Image (cartoon, rainbow over all chains, first blue to last red; front, side, top):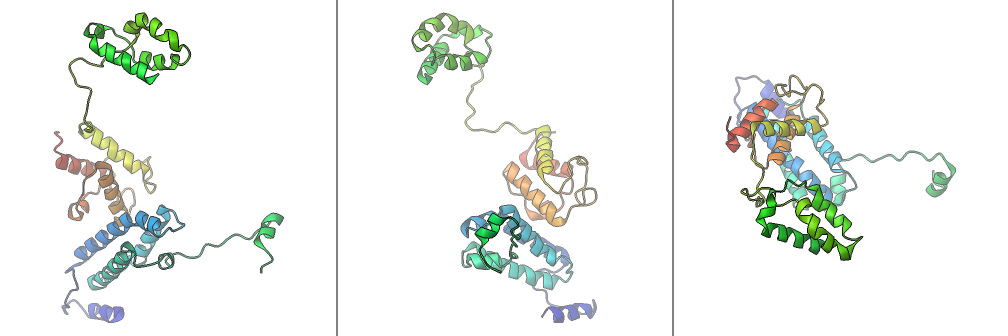
Length: 128
Length: 155
């Protein structure tokens, strides 16, 4: 879907395609900004509702990371599709249709540093 | 102890002739601290010194009640608050922040950073800034002008 959209837009400006929501790049960027605002305002409520063990600033950094991953895209239709998927995620998060595990899937697992002193190794157990 | 202080305040309000004493505000705060040590004689001693020491109602004509109203906005206060909020933002270096510094060109921020800044301004001043106008605010000076326009602050 994304590749066919890319080839369609790469085929040249002569071809006019039906837009999803926004007619040009500026409008698409405006939608992205609105979505970012909604996620930014939602982050502290998410942390409280799902009782996540992260700080609010970590949640907001993760939102920023997700948005920065797609920073390079210039096709308005692709941007619209990503905004639609982002809005779906936002709705599922706000309405509590997800669970803690679904929200924490965005985050990588924290790595515990290996214990060096005797007591930490003792508490850690005989594991590998 | 608090009731005794309140009684004194009520009595000073009832005697307008004593309002002319140019007493400092530290006197009523000192009075309650002395109360627990000498509870019995406090009323007797203070009756003479109270009229000189206690500060009356701060001003005769102006009402001292504000009814939870905010202090009026001026261009100076708006500018101070905007710069204060910007200094608290961790992606901005407070040394090279001025009212004319452009967010993207001078301070090297992103468009999403600018969205975050505008949201911080919304939280600070308590009113919504729609995205169509928010994307044009690129320097602190423009933000101050926009807020002054919205809040009808005279230049």
